[in-house]
Length: 105
Image (cartoon, rainbow, N blue to C red; front, side):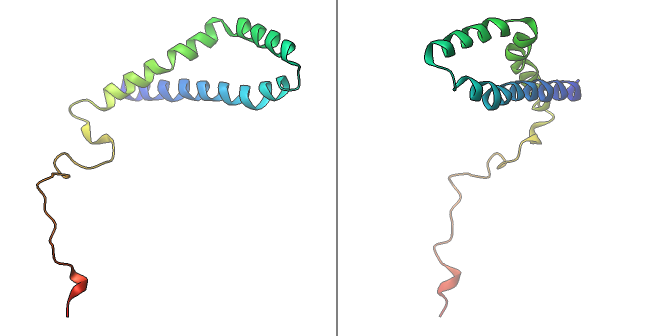
């Protein structure tokens, strides 16, 4: 279940990112050559066309497997998945020595 959720999160996030990248580097470059009124009309038509099950499934569904993967991978027995300081390692009680090793005479 953990691997499947991670795979689903990776695939849907990739589809989501790919959709926006493709739109930004192809569609928007073509639309910027249009006058303002034609641009607005074209964008409205694009918005109507993308309101379908495939787009909404990726657009609204991408966070679901990502959240599920996070919950499954960060359960009580898998807390050391993320890198970072261990709990208590940054304690404010820890004091550093006031002597510097570079000031020996």
